[in-house]
Amino acid sequence: MAREATRLLPPVLLVLLASGSWEQKPEFLHKLEGETISVKCLYQSWQDSKTVKAWCRQVSARTCTVLATYPRIQGMPWKPRNSIEDGVRWGYFIVTMTELKVEDSGFYSCGIYKSSEILTYRNIYLVVSPGEFFPFSVWFSAILNHKMLELEKILT
Image (cartoon, rainbow, N blue to C red; front, side):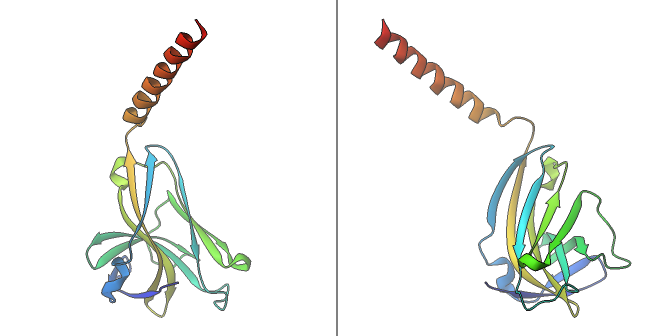
């Protein structure tokens, strides 16, 4: 699994040192407003339980804002809709974002914070749509109605 380093600026911002960090193709994730995402972030088994896990949102090509750490870093702002659960014995941690909003759409990354760096393990591109995903439901209803009409013709 690829790892890239990210250096910390002020406590809230991260600078991506290795340009490859965001060159990894991000995984696409689509959710609706109000839903929750859970992202599993694997890390090396040699890292101990004291390793700080991090979740951040990219705000520019080389900078991201930390949304959550585990354990929490003193002085780091806490975003209550973002949390990290450590599964140290499993070799991964789970990032959760609740009550998603359309404005949450964007690029995110999870990784390990160590010696003023973030080692990026996974990149996510999140798209949050408002309410019900209307086009899909219209398409599904149209297909269902069409199939019902075909079935009625066969039976009559």
